[in-house]
Image 1 (cartoon, helix red, strand yellow):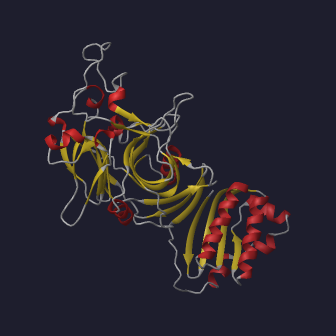
Image 2: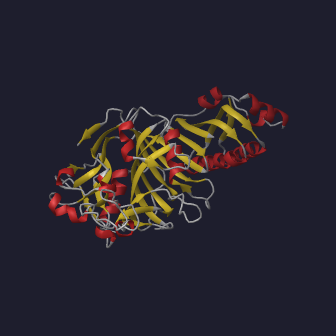
Length: 432
């Protein structure tokens, strides 16, 4: 079910689409409660796109009607679809709940009350969404830097390194570090991310605290990047999300999948600020600028950081969910594998993040101590700056999915927060 909200004067109109059953009727009730709490006492509900309604929907309408009557307000239904009209006629409630929309609109005096006219409410796959359109037609321009292949079986050298600036309008991630050049950064290379003018890198050698830089006046963070990407531009949507059932947090792959669906994107840049139930991820223990070496049972030219036993020296991996009940800032890109032509240049940087392999992505997370997020709309720049200026960053991880039988840790789970998303332009640049 989805709900779009529009306002005119003192009248709030809800346009409901989809199925109104026991599960989605709870979401409908919460939407009405929220609207009344905001001061809306005249509410008109358009049901022309409802394909099915159970008794739970009828109960939700009656409860809302009674609530608005006590406030001397208005609650009415209009433009009923055939399934809705049939149920209301059979229950003898049609005359009580149906309302002439023209009369309702005429009776709504003009005033100062406003609500974002381009806000939608949806409940999808166990996640409730409030969808705010921020910039119509916005998209991100993406630049790819370097080549990820040396991380598997080679040593990164100075020729692989590029200095990349990340302004407040950019997001990015990859493998790199802070420093004035390759020589000063080479011992600290690891996972990096950048969002809203704040950049962070994983702890050197997997120990201690991550380092970070924040844009200030003329200062803009620079990252010595071995490989990665940068996306610049505006976000088209902000999606506030929470689990339909409090005890069932949503997985990262479900959140990304539904965010792409609700914003009609196949390839997108994404930033998430959220309380997490636990993260599953990895980070390098040593800089990839160091030589790999060879185990005794590995032939010449076959060494890899991810072969056993070398992997134990090179990679730190969460065998179970970590950083439970923390606040995380996640930066990434995602695309659907079925769209095999648009933005396919991103594929070397992407890996499957869902169980089907249809959803590809690359996500890094910066971890902070838990703090509540502001309700409704969030200012990304201010929220990120507040987090980083607190100096409390705890970790930076490359998020992944662990589907190993029995021992697998699964994937990262998020409780509630905000997701900024925008489509990535098909005109992708490459800087070698």
